[in-house]
Amino acid sequence: MPRLAVSLQLALLPLLFAAACAVPATPARAPLPRAAKALPLPGEAFLLAGREAFVLLPAAPAPAPQPWVLYAPTLPGLPSDAEVWLFERLLQRGVAIAGIDVGESYGSAAGARLFDALYDHLVGARGFAPRAALLGRSRGGLMTLAWGADRPERTAAFAGIYPVCDLRSYPGLAKAAPAHGLDEAGLLAALPQHNPIDRLERLARAGVPFFCVHGDVDTLVPLAANSQELLARVRAAGGSAELELLVGRGHNMDPGFFRSERMLAFVLQALGRGEVAR
Picture 1 (cartoon, rainbow, N blue to C red):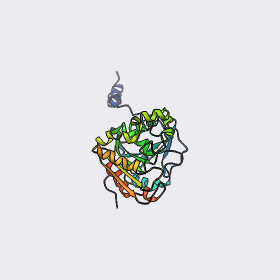
Picture 2 (cartoon, rainbow, N blue to C red; picture 1 turned 120 degrees about the vertical axis):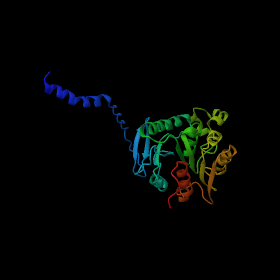
Picture 3 (cartoon, helix red, strand yellow; picture 1 turned 60 degrees about the horizontal axis):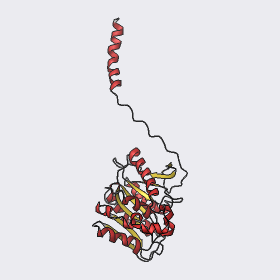
Picture 4 (cartoon, helix red, strand yellow; picture 1 turned 90 degrees about the vertical axis):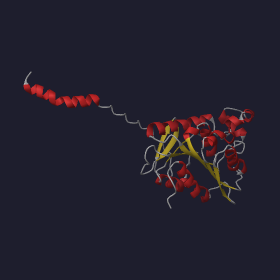
């Protein structure tokens, strides 16, 4: 064989060896279809499992895995401008916020499966942390508590803004029953298996902390049947629960519900993001 050909073969050997040993590149994540959902802050709205979902990412992401908040209810118009104060401060501390429209599911298994789809996507494809802080506003409490009750290993904490915790309180068993595939009598008979307030023990025993901000004159989602009862149940099971009581406030858009420094500090602490920057 001519010397030039041999020399070329020898020169190419390191390149051929490197190519043979190279690890195949990880395929890029296929983009999800975009959704037209309006968001109160810049973020990504997309379709997942046929439902509108969203994610807000911090400008400077936290070290992997990405800490995050699962927000509910994600319905038309929600989240709204009311959440901007809290969301901005979470994003500034490296915390992402995400949600998916589970409809008026009232804590049903069908709604929980949609949360599972979002969780699997975020944790599996985007490197989100395996435990999320749940943030339930009003009936979003039913949605997030019902999901977390069966998934303590996926739940870092629960924070509620006048959260609904008991189906009997809101929307009432007759209205909630169809979402659970039952009639009113059937839901009443099986209430301990479906009602979030009756299913908190596993979360409490797993060390998941709770925080609620609630008004003492709330007539739509009464304090006693919801946040106060949640605190009593969690503490009876040996868990940690706090209540920020807003005296003289009802079920409304008072800034005190949405700009709670105590709630912000609670969520950041639960996600390992430290104290609130003053």
